[in-house]
Length: 171
Picture 1 (tube, rainbow, N blue to C red):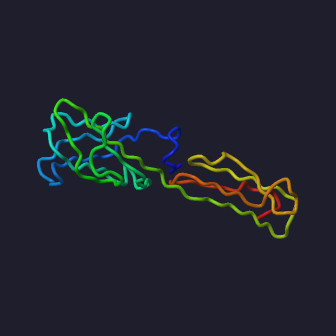
Picture 2: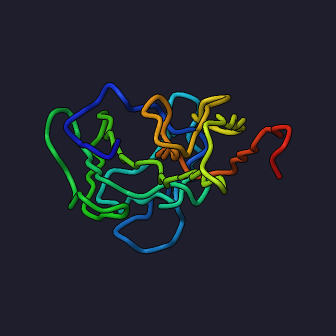
Picture 3: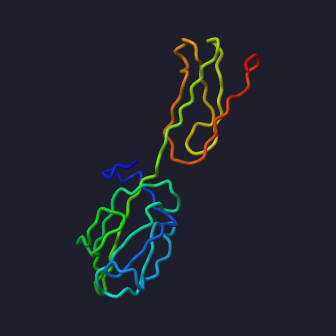
C-alpha cells in the first residue's frame, strides 16, 4: 500500500536482481542469484570490508517503485540507506549483514461510465478479467439510486478487460 508503517501487506519479492560491489567500484562483484520465493538472495564468501549494495529498481517488471531500504550487522545499522543503491555497507568477519529493500506495486485507476441514450431504467452488466476487479458488476444511468452510472477501481498495473454484455434492443 506504500505505507512504510504497515507491514501486514508485505510479501517477499521473487526474481529481484541485487548487486554488491566493493567500495562502490564495479569490479570483481560477488555473484548474487536473483531473490528466491522468500525474497532472499544469499552472497557467501564475501571478504570483510565496505560494499555498495543495490537492486534493480524495476524489480522483475516495470510495475514497482522504490520506498525504502536498510542494512544491519547484528542490530546495528550500516551504510547510507534510504535509496535503492547505497554505500558503506559493512561486512564483518563471522557475521551476517542483512539488507532489506521495500518496494510498492504501481497502481492505476480504471473507471467505467455508462451513459445510455436515452436515459432508461435498463440495467447493464459488465464482465471483467485481470487482477482484483470483480468478475461482474452492473451499472444504470437513470436517476435510480439502486445502481450507479459509474464504477472506479484502483488496481495494480497490468492488463485488464471490461466487456459490456449485450442487451436486446440496445446498440
